[in-house]
Image 1 (tube, rainbow, N blue to C red):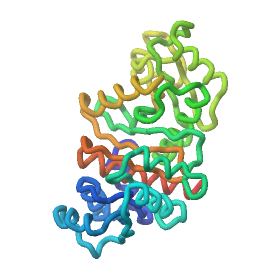
Image 2: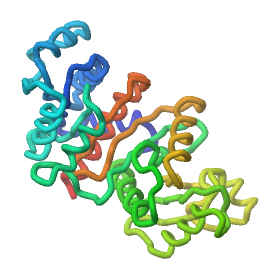
Image 3: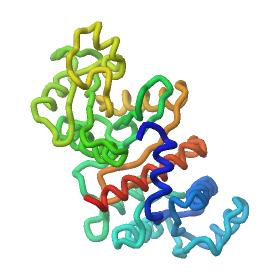
Length: 299
């Protein structure tokens, strides 16, 4: 898949997925799940206070009969019940509504009924950028502040799950830093070398790379880089959350791009859309999660 049109078309051709929305008293989230329902990608179970959800549905033009409800009060209670719906198999994906991210993730990590699978939960974004020749995966822009080598390996493994859902059998992973040379004064370059020496199943690793070397074949040629990842990366691994967040927002706000994002590392994908996200991004995120959920079932 090389574009979000490909992602949306693929998601529409899958068996329809079910989203459990935690604390569904949120207008923007309701609009997003309605758009996905109309496209035939997913239906939703709305978890929260029904008396508060219904007026918002009316405002957004949603019909009550098109949705299933799980009427429950309280933020923690709604998060718990939404997670249980996914862990029990009644829903395929979890979506954040009017609930704190920390509260939702605490329930995701609950040992009794939670969804934790990987040792690390991480944010994975996908971008379609006019100046790049394929969909580009960026991680981690929102979850892990200063990951160590082991955590970075887990973050890469999470990103590979997303890349597989996009149709890749083998992912080219660029480990980003400010230079392509290992320098003891630049920890990101040292950690990149350690990750390369470890190796990761399902990936061709390259790095350390400055960003241009990862995504520009001309820059890689000038620098004399012969790695198959150079200039052709599928996945960009940021050295820390500051770099990841700046890269993510630069692509989203300064470049001509389309995007999507999800939390990976759980047994099923978690959709966390922001109020700053446009309708296209929210729709893309749900479609991307549907592809990931399908791939997780196959595996």
